[in-house]
Length: 234
Ligand SMILES: Nc1ncnc2c1ncn2[C@@H]1O[C@H](COP(=O)(O)OP(=O)(O)OP(=O)(O)O)[C@@H](O)[C@H]1O
Ligand SMILES: [Mg+2]
Image 1: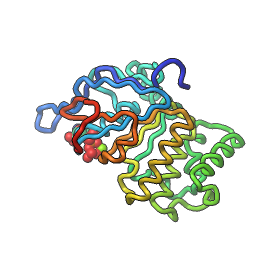
Image 2: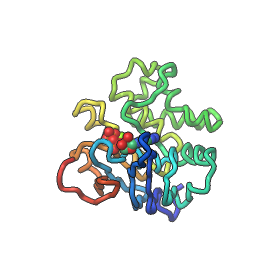
Image 3: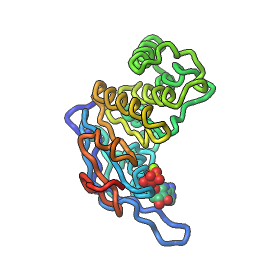
Image 4: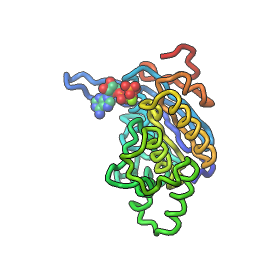
């Protein structure tokens, strides 16, 4: 569902973690961001700058200590954890650095998983799984155990799973970070191509400015704040 609203809005989002020592640690400090369907935004920043934290807030996995997160215009703030989980399943796809596939399921089953959780009937689901696997070139591997796949192939499966429910927002945390350069390039091409075809907004977290350069906008997280178009590699 894209509608008239941006897929993702962060409105003065702050995140403060309590530290074991007692002094709190401010990781995000008044972050504003707006991302529309069909747009791709890259987020860079040093290790520990808060990229994954920001992504978790955008996914409703964590709740900010201040400010608001809106998905398709809906404020996550007033929602119960169950409602946020449901919204995440319906509207948000996530791709991780280390794939997070279920090893005891085959390729097609891994992709279908979010549909099963939704309790969707078999026919349409099977068709969607088949189409997605076809588009990433894995149609002939659908019955293979995922453990037999290469890293690049596993990431393609993870991408299909993330897109299964036609999310409005696709979040990717270092999706090429555990792949060699060439495989990473192929995965990045697929990620951008599929996000565009599915009319998702894409938020791409990466260490690599080469990867980030493929996005329409690049933001750097630094001292808890976002700045656009950083000139210097982090
Ligand atoms: N649940 C938590 N409790 C306390 N501190 C946390 C928590 N999650 C993250 N942090 C802290 O927030 C800071 C930002 O972490 P985050 O994982 O967002 O960084 P990152 O930019 O993704 O780093 P990397 O590039 O290494 O993945 C770190 O100092 C981390 O220790
Ligand atoms: Mg991280």
